Amino acid sequence: MNTLFSCNYSRANISSINMSRQNKSSYKTATPALGEWLRQMRLARKLPGRAVAAAAEMDQAYLSKVELGQRLPTKEQTLALAKFFGQKPDFMEARRIAEKFRMEHAENPAALQALQILNDSPLKTG
Image: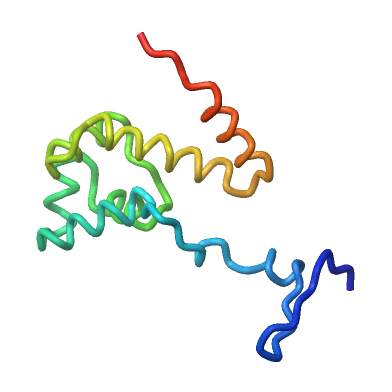
C-alpha cells in the first residue's frame, strides 16, 4: 500500500490514504451549510416545512432537498427565505453563493487556493 504519511495513535494505524477515503459529509465546519442553517431556523421556530416552502414559493420536497444539501434555492427563493426568517437579504445571498461554491468545488484540490486568491483580491462592487 502506498502511504504518504502514517501515524500510530492509541493503537490505531491511520494513513493518509484511509483518511482521504472518509465520508466528507462527516466533516464539520464552523459555519453550518445553508440547508442545515435553514432547517435549524425552521425547527427553532417550530414551523412545518410546508409553511417555509410556501413562503419561498417552492414545493416541500424541494425545500427538504435544500435542507439536506442536495439542492440550492434560487436567488429569488433565497430573498423570500431571508424575508420570512427576518435575515438580511445580502447575508442570505452570500450564504447561498458560498454553498454553491462548496457544492461545485468540494472535491477540487485547488478550491482552497481559489478562495485565497479571492481573499487577496476582493471583488470590486459598483
